[in-house]
Structure formats: structure tokens, C-alpha cells
Amino acid sequence: MKKEKVQDRILRVASDLFYRQGYNSTGINQIIAEADIAIGSLYNHFSSKNDLLQAYLIREELNWFEGFENSVAKISDPKDKLSALIDYRKKLQHSSHFAGCQFIKIISEIGDGNPVVSYFVKKHKEKQKDLIRTLVKQSNVKEESMDSDLIADTIFLLIEGAVVTSTINKDNDSFDQIKKMIKGLIP
Image (cartoon, rainbow, N blue to C red):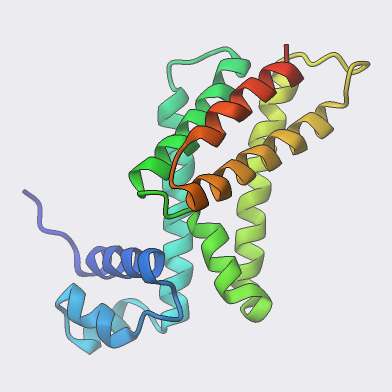
């Protein structure tokens, strides 16, 4: 088995801590101790805790879109890809034990106090919405029945609401409900 690089280990440990206990509740000393590194090693790879946070968000975004692409790799129909997107979000919730979306969590914790992070999270959510918009347009939604941008916005909000609801209720029922709603939006 290949040994994990120090930078990857630091990022893995910090990512887990930021997600589980929050960015503000995670100290540099805890990251150093749990990654089993010297303080100098941390600062050789990341100039600050904020730099580590940005690396965490970039990695999470890459993992999110790669995971989605892998989940739809064998699907060609855009409607089926929308359904697979919901299944993907449902799977993420289940595998995290209903801990929620890391991007929603970090923005609710940091708010606009860190403009770089705030901007990154907003852009990430816009990328998700653009993905949905593309799939809706590829589904040949009849323009006269409802605007495809409005349908995409509605699906995005339904999914985000399902994530929050499943986090609160500790179950995935909301994802099954929105799949039914989307079938009504895109027959």
C-alpha cells in the first residue's frame, strides 16, 4: 500500500475535523496532533488555517463533481441523470450519517466574514445549479409549459431543501418525495 503524503494526510484530517466539528471549533494543534505531524510540516504545506480551509473546499468540490460524474457515467438520458443526481445527494447524506452539505455548513458558520470562502461556496452552488439547468434543457422541456430556468431553479431548491430536511430528520424520505415532484415538472 502506498504511503499517504504528508500534505494529503493534513488535508484529510483537517477536512474530517472541519466537517464533523466545524471550522471555528477545530484548532491547528488538534490538526497537528491527529495528523501526527510537526507544526513545521503543517506550515510547509499550508500557510494558515484559512489556506487549509480553501484547500478543503477545493478538494470537496472536485470530489463532489467527480462523484456525480461517476454516478451518471453509464446514463445517457438527461431525465435519468436528474434522477441520478437526487440519488447521488441521497447517498452523500446517508454516507455522512446525515451530517449535511459541507458547503452549507461552512457558509453558515463563517458567513460573509471570509469573502473568499463565501464567494467560493456561492460559485460552487451556482455550478450545481448550472448542471441542473443543462440537464433540464437537454430534457426538451416545452418552453410554453414552463420556463426551463425556473424548472432548474425549482429542482435546485428542492434538492437543497431535501439535504437540510434529511439532516434534521436523519432520514432520506425527502429525496424520494422530490423525485416524484420532478416527474411532475419534467414529464
